[in-house]
Structure formats: structure tokens, C-alpha cells
Length: 196
Image 1 (spheres, rainbow, N blue to C red):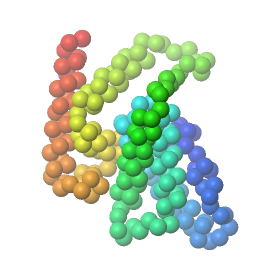
Image 2 (tube, rainbow, N blue to C red):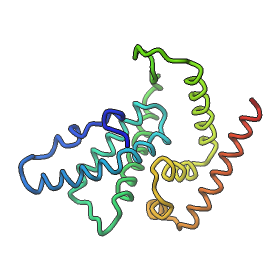
Image 3 (cartoon, rainbow, N blue to C red):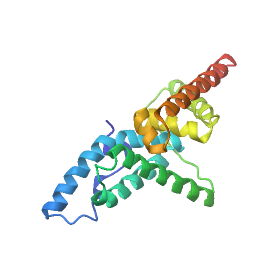
Image 4 (cartoon, helix red, strand yellow):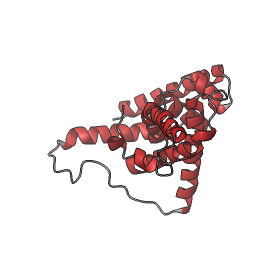
């Protein structure tokens, strides 16, 4: 599981609004901590499927967990599963992210190993970068609903049943769209590899 240091997301930032010392706050903090530890990696992976760059993914993931922390006292496990609730927040934060990006000029992200002082072989890094770019381009070839279902399934690691609840679709429809999306991705990726 990803650690907070690996993702740059700090639990301290999330709890700054908490009033320590009361039993309710301590119990709530403990319950939220368990939720945070369980879903940090899947939520972060889901966001990585949807945004470009590590810094953007970390920022959006931080926003998701901040909103979840603020809304946690009202969360009712009897009405929705934690994953459905959290990924609904994630989808809303991504929508906000896309809207704010549309109003800002493009930014250049300096992501990677530069400046770490560790000697590295550039060839495997370039191959991984090329493969990542090919996958990103293949994903962009899917329509928005297909991309979201693929991101929820493989980035978020949630079940077809959870996706169906989250998106208000039948579980069969989710499975069908997922199957067709994966076939499209496979065709695009194999086509790109044959052309190399």
C-alpha cells in the first residue's frame, strides 16, 4: 500500500480541523484513519488514471480526503458503502479539477528522477515513459464513460457492483462496457506495437 510519504499526502493536513481530546473526535479520527489507510492507494490510483502528472494526482487526492474528512461525521454506512461514498467525492473533485484547469494556462511538470543524485540508466526509464504515453493515448481514445469505468475498476480497484451503484448503471452494463473498453485498448495498443 502506498504510504503518505510516497503520495505526498499528509494525514496531519486532513485533521487540522479536528478538536483533539473529546472521545467523539478521537473515535471519529480512528474510524477515518482506518478508512484513509484502506482507500488511499485505490483513490490515488484512480486519480492517476484521470489526471496527468504526479503533482496533480497528489493535489486532487488530498482534496478528496479533505472533503471526506469534513463530511465524515455525516457519512452513514447504512446508506452507502464507504467506497461508493469516497469515489463519489473523488469524481466530484476531478470535475472541479478539470474546470479549474480549463481556466488556467498549461503548466509544465518536472516529474521524475532529476535532481535525486542517483545514477540511473535512461533506457528503461525512456521505455517506461513511452509505454505510459502509449497507454495514456489509448485511454484517451475511449469515450468519457469508458475511461471512467476503466479508471474505477483498475485504478480504484473497486468491483463492478460498486461501480454500478456509483454510476447508477446495471452491473451487467458495467461489465459489458468494461469488456468492450478493454478490447478497444488491446486493439489500439497492439496496433501501435505492430507499427513500431
